[in-house]
Every structure is written in C-alpha cells, then in structure tokens.
Image (cartoon, rainbow, N blue to C red; front, side, top):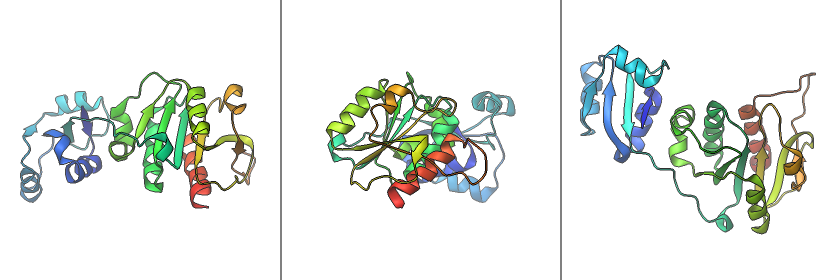
Length: 224
C-alpha cells in the first residue's frame, strides 16, 4: 500500500517503522534530512514527477511516499469496550479519516463502519494523519446486528439526530451512531436507539459536516 504526504510519512516512520517496506522520494532533500532517513535502514527509492503523480493519483504528495504493509489493528472483545463510535452509510473516505483522527485523539475504544462493503484504507489512513493505523476499526455490513450486539453487552445506544436532546444519560458504556451526511440515520436504526442527541445551532443553518458533528458529539458525550 502506498501512502503519501510529509506528515504521515514521518508519523509512520517514527511510530511504525516495522510496517515500512520502502521509502520513495520525488524531491531532492538536503543532506541532513536524507541522512536522517538513511538511519531507518529502509530501502530508499527515487521517483520522477510522472511516477509520483501516478502514485498519488494527482494528490498533494509533497514528494514523500511510503510503501507499507498494513493490517487493521484488532479490537478488544466487545464486552471489554466502553466507548464505541458507529459510522453508518458514510461513504466519503475523507470524512471517515477525519473522524478516525478525532476519535483516536479522544480515546475512543473502537470504530465500527457499517452500511458499506469495504473501507478504502489508503485515503482513510492519509486523512486520519496515520491514526487509522493505531485505531481499531471494524467493517460490519449490517448495523442492526452491531446494535443488537452492543445492547447485549450493556451499551447505551445514542444516535445523532436533529431532533435529539442536547445531552445524554451518563453511563459507563456508550455507543454513538452517526449517519450519512445526506440522509442521517434511517428509521430502522432510529427505532433501535436508546436516546438521540443533537447539536444546538445558534443560527438558522441545518447542517454540519459529519466529521465536525462527530467531533462535537464525541466531546460532549465522553468529555462533557
């Protein structure tokens, strides 16, 4: 798997050197920085601009690439978890990556992605600034199965909804469910919720980006 961008490049090298197969550069570095990379004892390859653009699919690579062996981090058993974020039918990998970055920073135990067949790990890792490497993320198609398992394990199931309350009951085990930005949560999911929560808007404006909304609600539920 190829990942690119200077920030994630150094995050992975400094924290997960063992998964890096090859360093790929498409810019000339000064002697000090190149010597620093050599100390990792990882093969270094030089790529021309055409190759770099192809590897990044036109993205802003900044001249820094890594070829990595990536395997999703395993989650603890559901009974051992206390904070779970469920993302249902969110298909924008950029949004998922941004949410992963915030969830990891807030100490959320596990993210469960539902409603999609597979996760595109490269953009998720990139948009999460590398947090997706350390964050346990599961992909489970059927959200109702997920909710049932969480309820059986003693979780309070809270869904994000415009008509929800501005706070939720305090409980040790909470799962926050975020729906797609366009449609929100489906009726079949809402029927399974224990509580709903919303963000109070000070101006007449009915939509926040789902990654922004998720960050606000995570802070409110687990840090409030």
